[in-house]
Image (tube, one colour):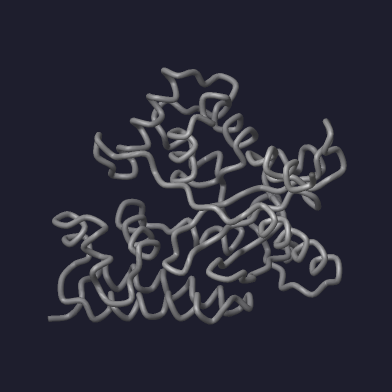
Length: 281
């Protein structure tokens, strides 16, 4: 029995991730992790969607070479036919459009969410919905946040009793060090560049991308290519840092030069300003 069509399509997407990472000089560990997961899918005699239906993501984690993060990636491909990680690596992610897929989130609110929270995936938005940050977005109160939570639960295939997602995040000094490495390497023209599809009608490869490691953490950093960053002229200042653990659980932060208050002129991590102040003191 050959592997299912879905398994082969999902494996192909994972192999594309591996190839893009290889071209961008990412850690070979990350490259090989995608390749090994693709090989597992290609040799699987049952459709991975059946495993998801019967055993959930845990069923995929039980397979060889598929950790929690890669299982979540396969789950995303099963639900949407796409993988946001691949889109990010190619500079193709349109977060505002993605947020508009959540019931009750229109264009204006999608932009407000992205401007306030600096997140660009549904999973990151879900974390913000659970930890209280979403209610601070203009136009979102407790009721609306609860409705968005419910919409995200439906989109992401969560149960009603799903507990608050665990937050994983590197220390602020580590994130700031990655930010420093990215900006210095970018200024020295030492980084590969990608050609983002957004705000780039000429198709120029202008956006530097960095892959680097700190202990168990794997990082991808690049300048923000969002509408807000372009509007405010911050495309050479705002740095989005994606981070991954060894089993490919992921998160993200945006690091900016502060323009007001006691940290004016210094680099701060949005949502972790208090920790940045404490680090300085």
